[in-house]
Image 1 (cartoon, chains in turn cyan, purple):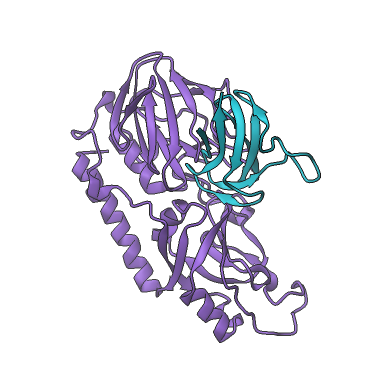
Image 2 (cartoon, rainbow over the protein chains, first blue to last red):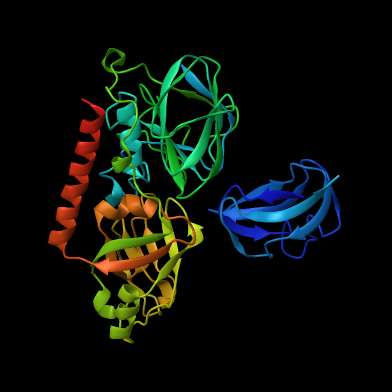
Length: 79
Length: 328
């Protein structure tokens, strides 16, 4: 298992915008460098990318929740 | 010489002690949000307190230097690396031409500073090198850094003389806590709050929301109540509105009575919200260290106490510089 952690504080979103489909869902196959969510802080949106390849196991943060730097957002089952 | 910006980070800007004296015509002071950290960074590399530094917000840049450089990183705790190897914060570092500086995940606080011997060499605008992004003036082309920018660095001052010590002693490094007590002077409009409203402001826990930047910080908490009144001509309809007036840096507004906003160094200079109090100047650096989620209590002090606190902060800076053996 590999954790994707937030490098910054802010509000986590799974979708690129309201009414749009999520970047990724549980069970999806994820590639290295794939965007899996965004964090909003100071009116800026920072894409969160996976640094491993595998299957998206679970989200540790819900849509619209606040995260702190170092918090695990998503768990990926590698391979 | 110059820094070559490979990755700019989230919001990296050139800042100095600020552009004071123009707030009356709507130009905010800007400058390093955490003046204390920036000043000690400058002291470590043999600069005066006036030289410009790079302010990094949450996520720092990846940069290389085209010549040998003496730098120091101060402020919020973060892992920093030279060519991928960890090096200490609050400590003078010697970079060789071609070396790469990069950062890990910030552990607390909000901002850290890269000071370089000689200082960041951008043109002064209205007497300051600070970036005011909203107004697109100062700093590097009036904006935060972008990948590919070559950020000029000036020649060393005082023939390259450096202070004796190369690290800031522990007792002079600020604490980056998840709880803060922030001192305020009440006024000018605290009398517009109900007793319960004032009690909520001073005796409740408020939390920094993610809506916090160089302009100001927004807090969530129990809210406050404003006294009902017939609004004067020219004021908005909400009891938190006043006829437009000048704002002070550090002043606290509570639009609608819900979430207090504290104005910081890039704030607008006036508007139509009642200011219930103003954070004392000695605690503005403390606010600059408040990350989202920081639990905050506001305590009212007198103007005399605020002036004593200002004196104490100046003395702390003097003592820190003396401990380094910094002479400029």
